[in-house]
Amino acid sequence: MTVEAADDDPIVCFCNEIRLSEIVAAMDNGASTLADVFDATWAGCGPCGGSCQPDLKAILDDYLQLDQADATDGELL
Image (tube, rainbow, N blue to C red):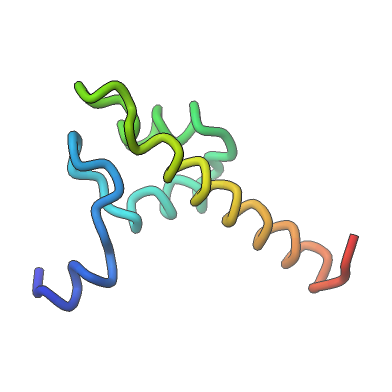
């Protein structure tokens, strides 16, 4: 992986070396809660005790908002 590629796909969970793309793939495959993301990727389940969990929650919330906007064709709810 090149430096540019690493910048485009940052590590979110350093304990388990889980990249953003892995988290997005889990959500694309149906993960819709933090527990689902943990189960699919092991992100947030490292020896640090889950210091990346706030970042994971923000990523999940953003993803779900975008998904909801797509479902309504951009109409405000």
